[in-house]
Image 1 (spheres, helix red, strand yellow):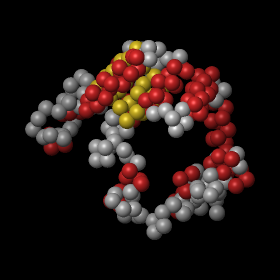
Image 2 (cartoon, one colour):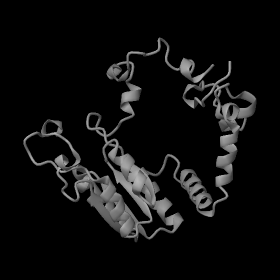
Image 3 (cartoon, helix red, strand yellow):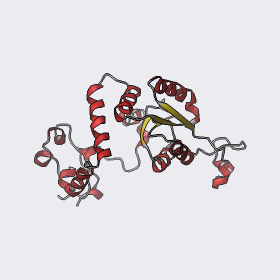
Image 4 (cartoon, one colour):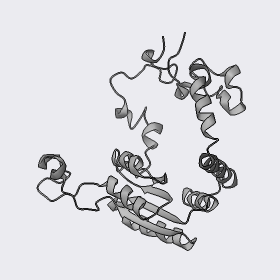
Length: 231
């Protein structure tokens, strides 16, 4: 059987050969090392870029030094220090202004300059982008468009070297990543139903949140990649 795409999600717990440097020897047929070594070689060469190399090295140091000790907030602080960043941007959902206030204070207490921009900046009516009244969260009222493009452009314009996303909606966060010039990390992934803990939907996918499955749910999830990804 020849696989067309990498499918690391289906790697058995007893294999995970890349952790031991044994992917070529023990990796399944859908292992990236077996399916597309050319792309891996291209990616490996990109680490020769000085900035990419520095980010990778400092990230690894933070991982090792703070492993199971530092919160993600602490990791952000230490990574930014190791990178020598001076100015940090916060792109937050307007519902997270209070949390952004706390984060801004924490970052400033470590000597960083902080720029923060909420998603509703610009107060653009949703109708301006073609949304009908019934397509708003609260029909019949003014509703400002979430404006991640302006969030990115403002943080770019004000010299932010590193950005922290807090609770931007699906798609809005994607637009922020697209337009932001500085490196970006996520502190909060929004999930209004699960208290911003989206992994719970995966942990409970076969019980309380079984509704996440589509009509083609496999009888035994996790055994092999879908048929369309192999031949």
